[in-house]
Amino acid sequence: MKKTYKMIDLDCANCAAKMESRINQLEEVSDATITFATKQLRVSAKNPDALLNEIQEICAGIEVGVQVVEKK
Image (cartoon, rainbow, N blue to C red; front, top):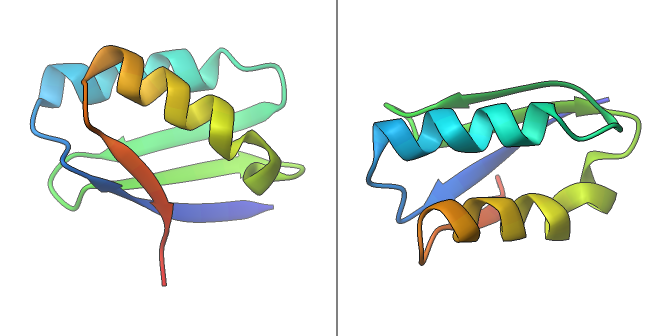
């Protein structure tokens, strides 16, 4: 299943690359891509929403204040 999330307050392209790398290391994730220009995260996993808290922790740990929210 693929899911797209918005990344609020993402200001650092280098940080985005680090986040993408760390999210891809999660066992349940088959693919994750962050598009810095559009501030979007696309995750392919069996249940991406179940990983949202872990993804949020990874992102906030790399760049303080970043929020990962469901794209409406």
